[in-house]
Length: 316
Length: 105
Image 1 (cartoon, each protein chain N blue to C red):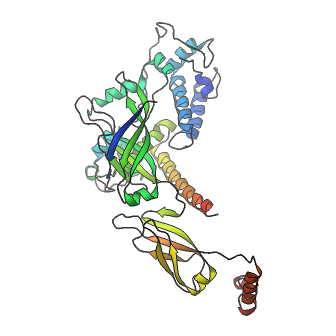
Image 2: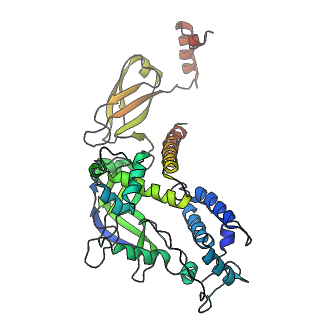
Image 3: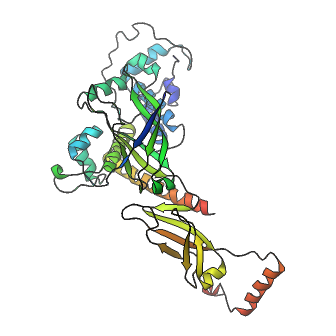
């Protein structure tokens, strides 16, 4: 087991006041709280910060830690001396852990102050023997919502060991994604939450759906948006062009005199929810390059023959 | 970390309808009725009529759990939590829009 420097975790020295500790903890917590900061490593850092705060913000625990820590360096191999806590009384109840909090405090913490979270969690389950429901966010491909595919989802879930420890466990679940699911919607996996006490039923696992960003479409609720490149003459003269949809290629009729950014609605071609969403095709006019003489000649003809001033609206 | 793999699980769509009572939410979030009433009055959870008639959706429950974590870990009050959650939702919307524009360029 390695010795942990709780003062360093909060960026403080040993002479910090209780006010300094509170300020440092709050500031770091606002930066690294996993509900506020989705960056990699934020969660681990937050755990370090809250463990340090758990000890240093409590004057009794802090005193005990200070006595113990003299002469130890962070990362150094460490064993607490037997009966090290004789004479100290830890009256402050450990803060409550929410069900989805994955990991307990470090081994170092547990050896000094006991299994604060795991023990308490087991105690709380006495009230409702049914296992806790868990909640996680998952990223799926848009196509999966169209077809209702089976996908292997990687989840990190807390699990209570028989010894009362809470450990983070990597689970791979093969899940049938229900057809027509929308972003922000929940799907339920029965009995995949925390195990129940004795014979009681396990909790459920709720997964909040999020779509991975897609090369072609973006999603707004049930509706999809597609940027469709069109040639200037297709926009000007109108006509039929091909467009991809998640259901396959379709013909889209472009009305004559369509401007850049015109939205065309393909009813019912969005997410297959009930009612189904729509697919909006947004026209994006692309100019052919004046690369060769033939193209240049055509552009010159237009310049000469068309009375067109694109800057008329600017008064010039 | 230990790994486990299981067979194919079927998932069902959870209704967006508010179906959970205040006691369901108390049990699932470890909150008291008074705390939930406090969140309702800050607009963190939509509810109508007297408390016994309140019904909450599963998404609201998840929002309340998050509110409770923020309140506990950052020392916020319910009004501060409500502001934080609103701002976070706004940032998320803006980030999605930004990602879309960056993709189009």
